[in-house]
Length: 450
Ligand SMILES: *[C@@H]1O[C@H](CO)[C@@H](O)[C@H](O)[C@H]1NC(C)=O
Ligand SMILES: *[C@@H]1O[C@H](CO)[C@@H](O)[C@H](O)[C@H]1NC(C)=O
Ligand SMILES: *[C@@H]1O[C@H](CO)[C@@H](O)[C@H](O)[C@H]1NC(C)=O
Ligand SMILES: *[C@@H]1O[C@H](CO)[C@@H](O)[C@H](O)[C@H]1NC(C)=O
Ligand SMILES: *[C@@H]1O[C@H](CO)[C@@H](O)[C@H](O)[C@H]1NC(C)=O
Ligand SMILES: *[C@@H]1O[C@H](CO)[C@@H](O)[C@H](O)[C@H]1NC(C)=O
Ligand SMILES: *[C@@H]1O[C@H](CO)[C@@H](O)[C@H](O)[C@H]1NC(C)=O
Ligand SMILES: *[C@@H]1O[C@H](CO)[C@@H](O)[C@H](O)[C@H]1NC(C)=O
Ligand SMILES: *[C@@H]1O[C@H](CO)[C@@H](O)[C@H](O)[C@H]1NC(C)=O
Image (cartoon, rainbow, N blue to C red; front, side, top):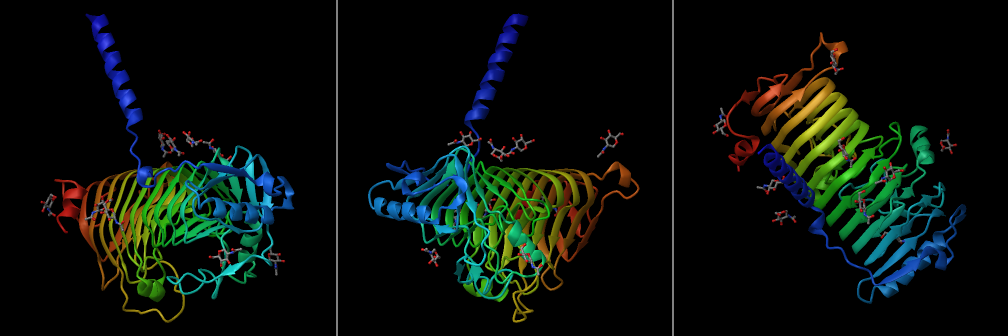
C-alpha cells in the first residue's frame, strides 16, 4: 500500500513537473521566428576580429549585401565569429539576423568626433541631454521590419566610459548614443546577447511595435550615468522576459515622449510585458516615465527580482508632461536592499525647455501593485500625487516591506498625498488616503472603475 502510494506520488510529482516545464508563460510569440535561407560571414567582407582593426566598412558592405539578398525569400544572417570586431556605428537593414557566436564581441570605437549625428526624436523636441541633434545609436535601425539580434551570448560592447566622462566633465556636445535603437520598426527580436557599457540607454525601441527582448544580459557600472536597460518608448506590444540587468539607471523604463513635444506627437506606449527580469541599480527596477507625455497604458510586470536598488517600483511623471499612466499591473516583485520600495510621484524629472504648459497635468489612474516582498527596505512607500490631478484607483495588495535590523527603531513607513484607492494586507500599513478593503482583489477593484 505504501509502495503504491509512493509510486502514485512519484507519478503525480513527475507529471506536475513536466507540465510546468512545457507551460512557461511567455509573450515572445508576438514575433514569428523566420528561418533565414542565406548566411554570410563578416570575415568574407574583410572583417578582422583582432580588437584593433576598424571594421566599419566590413559591416557596411555585409549589410548592403543583405539588403540585396533580402529581396529573396527569408532574408539573410550576418554571422560574427569569435573575436573582437571594433567598428564605428552602423545601420541594420530589414529581414536580417545579426548572429554573434560565443566569444564574438562587436565593440564600439570611442571616437565621438566622427560619430554620426541624427535628428532629435519629434516626441522629445531635442536631444534628451543636450539641445539639437543626437549621436546615432551604435547599432541603429530606422523603418525596419523582421530584424533579429541573437547568437550564443556574444557581446555588444559600447565602451561607454569616454562618454560617461564627457557627461561628468560637461564637455558633451550632443546627446550620447544609445547601444541599440530601433525607430519606426516592427517585428524585432533581441535574444541571447550581452550588452556591455552602453554610452547611454542600452536598448531603445521608439515608435515601434512587436518587439521581443529575451535572454539578454545588460551590464554597466552602477555609477555609469543614464545607462537604462530597456526603454520601450512610444511603442506597443513589447515583450521583455528572462533577462538580467545591472546598470547605472532604471532597469526597464516605459516612456512616451517629453512634455509639449510628446503631447503633440501623441504616440503612446501600450501592451508592454516585463516578466522574469532580475537586476540591480542605484535607480529604479521597474519604472514608468518620467517622459510619458504620449500616454502609457496596459503594462504588466511580474516575477521580478531586484537587488541593491535605489527604488524598486517607480512610476514617475511631472507637471507639464500631460498624457496618462493607466492600467499598470505589477505583481510578484521581490526587492532586497533598497532605499525605497514603491514610489509613485508627480514631480520627477526635468523639462526640455521653459515652453512647457503648466496646465498640462498628467492623469495617473488604475495602478495595481500586488504580492511584493521586500527586505532591507529603508522607506516602504511614497505616493505623491498632483494637487489638481490626484492619482486615483491605486490598489496595493499583499505587500510586505521590511527594514533592516539596524533601523529597527525606524520601521519603514509610507508617505502619501493627493491619492485615492485601496489597500489590503499591506505591511507596514500605508497612509490613510488609501481605504482598507479586505475583500476582493486589485483586479476586481480597478475593473470596477472602467
Ligand atoms: C543610418 O540611419 C540614419 C537614420 O535613418 C541615417 O540618418 C544615416 O544616413 C544612415 N547612415 C548610413 C551610413 O546609411
Ligand atoms: C552571458 O554572458 C554574460 C556576460 O559574460 C554572463 O553574465 C551571463 O551569465 C551569460 N549568460 C548565459 C546564459 O550564459
Ligand atoms: C572630459 O572627458 C573626456 C573623456 O574622457 C576627455 O577627453 C576630456 O579631455 C575631458 N575634458 C575636460 C575639460 O576635463
Ligand atoms: C538562449 O538562451 C536560453 C537561456 O539561456 C537558452 O535556453 C536557449 O537555448 C538559447 N537560445 C539559443 C538559440 O542559443
Ligand atoms: C532571477 O532570479 C531568480 C531567483 O533567484 C532565478 O531563479 C532566475 O533564474 C533568475 N533569472 C534571471 C534571468 O536572471
Ligand atoms: C494591445 O493588446 C490588446 C489585447 O491583446 C489588443 O486588442 C490591442 O490591439 C493591442 N494594442 C495595440 C496598440 O497593439
Ligand atoms: C489592462 O492591462 C492588461 C495587461 O496588464 C491587459 O491584459 C488588459 O486587457 C488591460 N485592460 C484594458 C481594459 O485595456
Ligand atoms: C534580522 O535579525 C534576525 C535575527 O538575528 C535574522 O534572522 C534576520 O535575517 C535579520 N534580518 C535582516 C533583514 O538582516
Ligand atoms: C471593497 O472591494 C469590494 C470588491 O472589490 C467592492 O465591492 C467594495 O465596494 C470595496 N469597498 C470599498 C470601501 O472600497
